[in-house]
Structure formats: structure tokens, C-alpha cells
Amino acid sequence: MKSLVIRGASYGLAAFLLLMASGPRARAQGLHLSPLAKAELGDHSLASINADNIQASVKVETVSGCRTLKTLWDTNGETQAASCPVATLTITDKQHPDIPASVTRLTTYDADHRGVMGLTLSMWQLDPTNDRPQVMVSAFTGGAHCCEVTTIFSRAPDGTWRHVNMGMRNGGEPFPVMAMGRNSTPVLVTSDDRFLYTFSSYAGSYAPLVIQSLRDNALTDVTRDPAFHDDIARSLAERRQEWIKDGRNEPNGFLAGYVASSATVGNLVPAWKTMLREQDSKSDPTFAMSRCTLKNLLSTKGNQPCTDEENKPLPFPVALSAFLVQTGYITETQARALPLTADASAAETSPSTPRAEAPSQQKPDGDSVQSYSTTLTNKEATTVFGIALGFFVLLAIGGTVLYFLPFIIGCARGATGLLSIFLVNFFLGVTLIGWIGALIMALCFESRRSYDQRLIDYGAGRRDRP
Image (cartoon, rainbow, N blue to C red; front, side):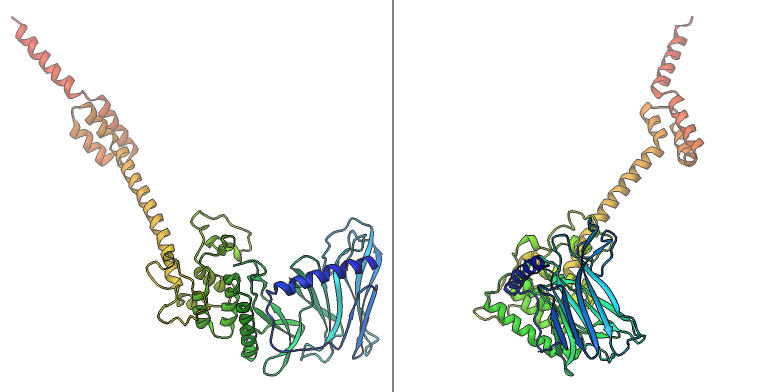
């Protein structure tokens, strides 16, 4: 176990320093709350806390049957070992000794004691609908940017302990519990990791704040609650000043999260205009978004095949608008009203603020995101219509030629009775028998040349008779 702790401490410290250096996650404005009790597993095999007659402990011990053992986090997958170290959480309510303790297998370690690191056990009063405190357990799974896994346990009215998983999220430390909003409500502050690596590198990305509240053992996203808007706006302003001070690196990565967070607090239009002035229209093509990317972004069927046209990079404002619609930050109506280029006469650009010139292809036949998207759609529709029309014309010509083939053959042979062939072909050709009859007539009727020669021969024969 000691090797696990030493390795975990070194890895966790390195990951934490890297995260603090890159800092893409938003930092909230508000009061950081302290837990009722807290313990870290550290270099021990047991960590235990007590508060309000609730006792919670995490114990690491070797158990058998690891090949089929199911754990809550299941971070290490299936193991081939018959026995392995397992971290187990036990929660006991001392007020109700008649109720059995809650026992949960959290995660396994391998034979070398490698697994999650920095396992932390804490107790909080998060749920205003529950008079008993909640138990939170967190750990770091390893890696440069991922992942922090967190689970919250709450006591239900029937005395059982139920849990809610916060999932695996970017980070190297437990998400902070803060008192935010007008009523200083205890909330969990996380971030929207969908913005990481989307428009820039990890270090250049800005992940907007996500504020969650625990009620009735369920997490609710309360980010859009007006009670938290002032805190979010202050946090966003502070983060923007830090970005400017750091040299405005990878602007599109920051501006994407900046616009999203501004939209959350009702400042979409001013933030969008700022983005138009400060965007990088020639950003790294690695992070250029196409309609193919957008199509597959939220697909539940995996990546779908795309055409060459769909794989073409979109201008940043167009891509950002579509991304914000798909992720729920703005509506399609709001997207249609957003301009594609900054108005030079109305721009308030300071000498230190670089102004990005929008490329000419960003403004076709209109000045809004919707007009650009509509233009692309119209071009596709025109192409499809042209192909369909051409195919229809070819089909019509081919069908006409095939239908009148008997008459055409008759004309080519110079057959006598062309009028009869045409009438049969025209009126009865729609029936297979009529068409075949007209074809036989075209092939069997004597040609005009043969007929004329026969007349000449016949006339000459009469003159030769005595």
C-alpha cells in the first residue's frame, strides 16, 4: 500500500501542477465551504470520518474473486488476478443502529497497488431537503488532464444510503463546494468539459462554469438560475483579465467559452461582438470545425460518413454558433440573429486589442450566421436539383428514343409504309405487342430503294417484250 501512496502522491502532485498551469477550468466567485469532516487515505489502508452521528470509512484490503468483482467506479476494468486490493466504503448511522451499514466496493488495485490516487473522504451538508449530512468520496484516475471521479451518498427516508455519480471529469482534485448565489446556497462547481480541445488545445480552452445543486439525492444544473448570474459574471470578467494579461493565447479556445458563459447570464450579444473583433480567423486547422464534426458531435450512433463538402472547415463564428445551439447555450432563433462580421464603425477596439479581419468567404449574400448556413444549404440543393434534372432529361431522351425505335429503324431503312409504322408505334407502342408489331413492320417492309428498283426493272421488262 505504501508504494501506491508514494506513486499516487507524485503523480497527483504532477497532475495538479499541470492543471494549475494550464487552468482551462473556470474558477467561481463565491465562498469556499469547509466540510463537516474530511480524511485522505494517504499512506494508510484506512481513512475514517465522523460527523452528526454518521461514520464513514474507506478501507483497502485484499479480497478474493477479483475476476468477477464489480465495483462502483470500475476504473481498472477486469483483472486477471484471483485476489486483489479493494477500496471499500462503509457508512453507519449511529442514530439508527438497527439499520445495517451501507457497504460499497469503490475500486480495485492491481497486484502492484496501482489504481486511483488521492482518494479523499468528506462529509457535507449539501441537500437542504435532507437533515442528515452527505458523504462524498473522490479520487484521481491518473493522466495529464483526466479524470476526477466523485460520488455522493445521501441517506434516504427509509434509512438506506443512495448514491449519485458525478461521472469522470477533467481535473486533479475534488470539485469545490461553494456558497454562491443570493442565498449563499451550497453548490458543487464543475465545468463544461465539452469545450476542451474543441476550438483550441487543452491549455488554450476555457470551460464554462457548471453549477449543480443536490436535492432529494439528485443533482440539478442550476447554472441558469438568475441567483447565480452575478457570481458567474464576476468569475468570467476575472478570467478574461487573466487571459488578456497572459497575451491572449489561442483566442478561439477562450472566446468559445466566453460567449457560452455570457449567454448563460444574458449577455450573448455583447460577448458575440467581442468575439467577432478578437477571433483568430486563421487558427490552427487541427481545431477547425466542419459540418461533419457538428453532425457527429452529439450522435448516439457513432461517427457517420461525411461528404467532401461536409468536411470543409467552417468559419469560426459559424462553427461556434452551431456548437452553442447543439450544446444548449443558445437557441436557433438566437443563432439566426447573430452577425458574422464585426461592424467597423461600431467597434470599440483599444490599441492593445488586435482586430481580426474576417475573410471574404465569411459573408456570402448576407450578414448573419443563418444566412451563411442557408447559402451552404442552397448550394447543396442547387447541385442536387441540377443532377436530378440532368438525370431526368437523359431518362426522358433515352425513353423517347427507345419508344420510337421501330419508327427510327424504319426511317433508317427507308422502309415503305412509314406512316403506318409511325401510327402503330405512336398509338399502340405503349403496349408491348404494339411496339413489337411496329418493329416487325419496320424490319420487314420493303425499303423505298428496293421498291423503286423493282419498278424500274418492271418497266424495263415491259419495253423488252415484242
